[in-house]
Length: 607
Image (tube, rainbow, N blue to C red; front, top):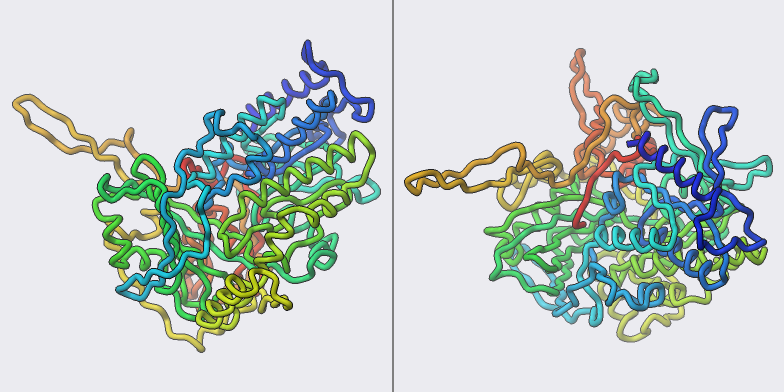
């Protein structure tokens, strides 16, 4: 994979150094970057005007907008988008009820261009769940004009639109390092070496990383992006922005194929209440899109207190609710995944500009919590960053324009109105619901106060002796599942007709389907690193009862008994869904999530 990408990159670089016949001449303000050169370190380097890390909605919107501006101005800027997933969309997971506002601005004729946006919202319900009842409440979401979509499918379509405009999109590239010049200005990124064994030796497949140099670098890695977080810390961007720490949630999601008679295309249901306790913020969703498919998920705020809580098992428990189980019975779970999301909102927006580039989309944290939407704001931020980038490269202006334009945009207005909903639930479920109703129906987003977030998520975890272990029901294998089943496979059953009208059911490896498609090269250095290897056994297990074995939705972390009979943390890195929960929730911030070899991780297709 990496060798193929390097060959493609080399071909693209040669093409860039020799403009195609009929191509527009470059603006005099944009030097002809694109030549390949070898550095003394032995790493190959590609040079672009703009390097974008992450082929999600923000990164691709930025790339498309840049090329649109180039065409309008008869200019030419070379733009490269790197994606660590094996293909565009492979690591993209979201609800998703899509608000097309930003797409309307970016590609006004998308409805005529076969976009995978086909199912308008037909009904919008809001339930308060108790263990056996679902009480209908007035829906606060206002989803008229929105669509039920697969975001992984949408970004694949956006990637084709970007490539049609001349953007180079490279999946399978895991950007692992920020590059600086002698003045500490960011000059691009480097991918990690591949073909390194667990013991650090070079395997036969070894390939050194590639440097991708850019005059401007845009980081669009999604929630808790590893490079973005380093930039935010090193440049103190959180303090220079709205000042408060980010707070997060984890979303657990499945795609089901349900019975035809139960399928209602465009039906949208959100819930609050059961199975979560009154001190834990969260809720669930059920979205019907096309082809009898149902997206079902549970979102749990990561500032939960009880170390025995397992978001994965809470999700399995949720599916046993009578109003939910009846939808799923007779159906088949076809895909599973998980991803963290930003919930800090307005109070947690960092200053998004750094020397040499900017942070866009969910890496900066533009999700609107009460709307449960962030795709439209991520795309808009990418478009605004593209406009600032274009002016910086062509006209010599400053990237500060990006920050100024964000504050003038509908992103800022929207998030400011929504700023008090999430922190209201620091006081518990009932006060949170009451304050939210006050915000929506009385103040309408114009309240005279701004609430603050509570403790950072990792500090919110209580010691285990303050709670009772939670006994979760055993999975039934039909509606609820254990983690290995969710991660890996089910057999697609086929019917074969033999002579004399004898029918048999059979399964065969060629029909083996995978729910998460997660996969990593086994023989590589661990991408989940312990800053202090003694912390799990010395602190996490005795004080917090080993919470990493529960907050991870892929059972990456488990305590096993060593040869001396002592418990020892074992890391199953190959299970990792790249959700980033461990990087956020570990009580002592001892786990560092880093990128594995490019192409590793989940392989979502309809998430």
